[in-house]
Amino acid sequence: MRWLGVSGWEIAFDGRVLYFDPYLSRFDYRLPGGPLAVDPAVADRLLATGRLAGPPELIMISHGHWDHMADVPSLLSRPDWAGATIRTISTETHRHLMHAMGMTDAQRKNNIVATGGEDLEFGGGAYRVQVIRSLHSQSLGYGFFAPGTRVAPPPAPASINDLVEGGTLAYQVTVRDRLKILMFGGTNFVERELAGMRPDVVAVSMTDSSSLHRYLERLLTVLGGPRYVIPVHHDDMVTGFDDPNLRDTVDAGAVRRVKDAVRALGLRTEVIEAEHLRPLLF
Image (cartoon, rainbow, N blue to C red; front, side):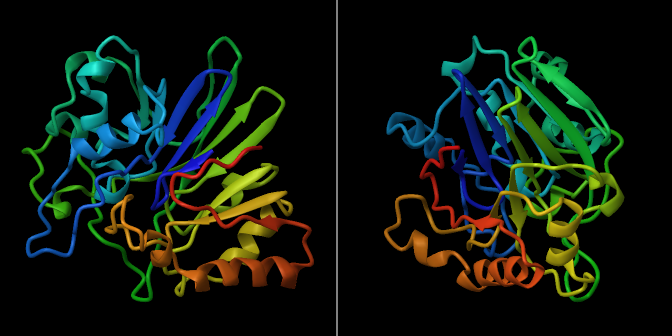
């Protein structure tokens, strides 16, 4: 597993590569008007230096916001991946947004529209993907950025405001009987949807959870105390991968909160502090 920043992951095993929320451009979303500034050259550099593997055979999308989905159409259209079959999993809204961002007819045929509850097998049983209905983060004001859905392709998005949430999904990837990996793109969850799930590794989103009731305690409890927990979505989202100060942009307080919750619950869970692009071996 390789953390791609924000909530993104690359999972590699047995010669296969999967992506979850691969946001790589890390452009400055704070500029006036929030212009979309997807930069394919970032992926070029990461692939050329071996810090990213590809092409992936599957890209899983949690929701439609720019810091989760903006790079996906660009990745699908890489000329050197033209011969690869890359499937995507998304909601209907995300499919329409990607269409507006240039997704081709062939790429749409490889898009799996999901709502949560799908239990999918890939590679002749090499791995299983469970799509889980989930929720976006909710801040102190009980709302979140750019809510909304799309029932048809909109005009080409020009601003981060045009990439609406469009429903949020979580995913559990099971590599045969060897490892179960649960990934969230939002700092929230639907408790009943996770009942009975026992992942080995959980990537826990750590944006603002101040409006939620005992977010970490409820999540860790319903999952039965996972063996490993990795805090994510706690970096600044704009500092580039080659910036020597990148590591300093990770919120150490978020990591402490996860460790404190594990300790308070008396769990044996190990909290792993991931570093951008550095592989974690399980």
